[in-house]
Image (cartoon, rainbow, N blue to C red; front, side):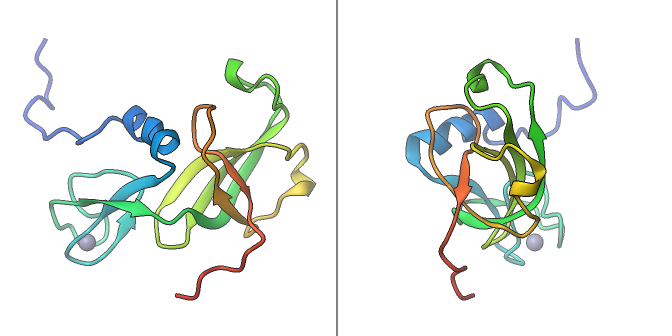
Length: 139
Ligand SMILES: [Zn+2]
Protein backbone atom coordinates (compact mmCIF):
# COMPACT_ATOMS: atom_id res chain seq x y z
CA UNK A 1 0.00 0.00 0.00
CA UNK A 2 1.37 3.38 -0.97
CA UNK A 3 1.53 6.03 1.70
CA UNK A 4 1.97 9.76 1.57
CA UNK A 5 5.53 9.62 2.87
CA UNK A 6 6.89 7.25 0.22
CA UNK A 7 8.76 10.12 -1.42
CA UNK A 8 10.36 11.44 1.78
CA UNK A 9 14.03 10.82 2.54
CA UNK A 10 14.71 8.13 5.10
CA UNK A 11 16.71 8.60 8.26
CA UNK A 12 20.22 7.25 7.67
CA UNK A 13 19.86 4.86 10.60
CA UNK A 14 17.06 3.40 12.63
CA UNK A 15 17.19 4.33 16.30
CA UNK A 16 17.90 0.66 17.06
CA UNK A 17 21.13 0.91 15.05
CA UNK A 18 22.17 3.90 17.09
CA UNK A 19 21.44 2.27 20.41
CA UNK A 20 23.29 -0.89 19.36
CA UNK A 21 26.25 1.25 18.34
CA UNK A 22 26.27 2.86 21.80
CA UNK A 23 27.22 -0.38 23.47
CA UNK A 24 29.46 -1.65 20.65
CA UNK A 25 31.54 1.46 20.20
CA UNK A 26 31.19 3.03 23.63
CA UNK A 27 30.28 6.27 21.92
CA UNK A 28 27.10 8.28 21.64
CA UNK A 29 26.24 9.23 18.12
CA UNK A 30 24.21 12.19 16.99
CA UNK A 31 24.00 14.89 14.36
CA UNK A 32 25.44 18.33 13.83
CA UNK A 33 24.21 21.10 11.58
CA UNK A 34 27.13 22.26 9.38
CA UNK A 35 25.44 25.63 8.95
CA UNK A 36 24.68 26.80 12.51
CA UNK A 37 26.44 24.16 14.63
CA UNK A 38 23.35 22.84 16.42
CA UNK A 39 24.03 19.40 17.88
CA UNK A 40 21.15 16.98 18.33
CA UNK A 41 20.72 13.34 19.25
CA UNK A 42 17.70 13.05 16.98
CA UNK A 43 17.92 12.88 13.23
CA UNK A 44 15.75 15.27 11.26
CA UNK A 45 15.45 16.17 7.62
CA UNK A 46 16.34 19.75 8.43
CA UNK A 47 18.05 21.55 11.30
CA UNK A 48 15.53 22.39 14.03
CA UNK A 49 17.17 25.79 14.59
CA UNK A 50 18.09 27.17 11.15
CA UNK A 51 16.30 24.89 8.71
CA UNK A 52 19.49 23.82 6.90
CA UNK A 53 19.00 20.51 5.09
CA UNK A 54 21.78 17.97 5.46
CA UNK A 55 22.73 17.16 9.03
CA UNK A 56 26.10 15.44 9.50
CA UNK A 57 26.82 12.58 11.87
CA UNK A 58 28.87 13.46 14.89
CA UNK A 59 29.89 12.03 18.24
CA UNK A 60 28.02 13.36 21.27
CA UNK A 61 29.66 14.29 24.54
CA UNK A 62 29.44 11.45 27.07
CA UNK A 63 28.77 13.79 30.02
CA UNK A 64 25.83 15.97 30.87
CA UNK A 65 23.18 16.77 33.43
CA UNK A 66 19.83 15.29 34.28
CA UNK A 67 17.00 17.42 32.90
CA UNK A 68 14.12 15.10 33.79
CA UNK A 69 13.65 11.66 35.32
CA UNK A 70 11.17 9.21 36.73
CA UNK A 71 11.53 6.07 38.83
CA UNK A 72 10.45 2.82 37.19
CA UNK A 73 9.12 0.14 39.50
CA UNK A 74 7.77 -2.21 36.81
CA UNK A 75 10.70 -3.04 34.52
CA UNK A 76 10.98 -4.76 31.19
CA UNK A 77 12.54 -8.23 31.12
CA UNK A 78 16.11 -6.98 30.72
CA UNK A 79 15.81 -4.83 33.84
CA UNK A 80 14.22 -7.23 36.30
CA UNK A 81 17.32 -7.11 38.50
CA UNK A 82 17.49 -3.31 38.45
CA UNK A 83 14.03 -2.21 39.57
CA UNK A 84 13.37 0.23 40.88
CA UNK A 85 15.66 2.36 38.74
CA UNK A 86 15.63 5.76 37.10
CA UNK A 87 14.65 6.57 33.54
CA UNK A 88 16.45 9.81 32.79
CA UNK A 89 16.55 12.56 30.20
CA UNK A 90 20.09 13.96 29.96
CA UNK A 91 21.16 17.26 28.45
CA UNK A 92 24.63 16.50 27.05
CA UNK A 93 27.41 19.05 27.55
CA UNK A 94 28.09 19.58 23.86
CA UNK A 95 24.43 19.66 22.87
CA UNK A 96 21.83 16.99 22.33
CA UNK A 97 19.29 15.51 24.69
CA UNK A 98 19.08 11.77 25.15
CA UNK A 99 17.07 9.31 27.22
CA UNK A 100 18.69 6.57 29.25
CA UNK A 101 18.56 4.70 32.51
CA UNK A 102 20.39 4.76 35.83
CA UNK A 103 20.81 1.80 38.11
CA UNK A 104 20.69 2.20 41.87
CA UNK A 105 18.35 5.19 41.95
CA UNK A 106 15.40 3.77 43.85
CA UNK A 107 13.61 6.87 45.06
CA UNK A 108 13.04 10.38 43.60
CA UNK A 109 14.90 11.87 46.58
CA UNK A 110 18.12 10.20 45.38
CA UNK A 111 18.42 12.22 42.17
CA UNK A 112 18.03 15.92 41.36
CA UNK A 113 17.47 17.87 38.18
CA UNK A 114 20.91 19.17 37.23
CA UNK A 115 22.86 16.25 38.73
CA UNK A 116 25.97 15.43 36.70
CA UNK A 117 25.99 12.07 34.92
CA UNK A 118 28.10 10.31 32.33
CA UNK A 119 27.45 7.62 29.74
CA UNK A 120 28.58 4.15 30.79
CA UNK A 121 28.36 1.45 28.11
CA UNK A 122 26.36 -1.56 29.25
CA UNK A 123 25.44 -4.95 27.89
CA UNK A 124 21.85 -4.05 28.64
CA UNK A 125 19.73 -2.25 26.05
CA UNK A 126 19.44 1.50 25.98
CA UNK A 127 21.88 4.08 27.24
CA UNK A 128 23.17 3.68 30.77
CA UNK A 129 24.18 6.72 32.78
CA UNK A 130 26.06 6.78 36.06
CA UNK A 131 26.81 9.60 38.47
CA UNK A 132 29.69 11.78 37.39
CA UNK A 133 31.90 13.30 40.06
CA UNK A 134 34.03 15.29 37.64
CA UNK A 135 33.19 18.94 37.03
CA UNK A 136 31.92 19.86 33.57
CA UNK A 137 34.60 20.53 30.97
CA UNK A 138 35.03 24.25 30.54
CA UNK A 139 33.33 25.40 27.38
ZN1 LIG B 1 21.32 24.73 11.77
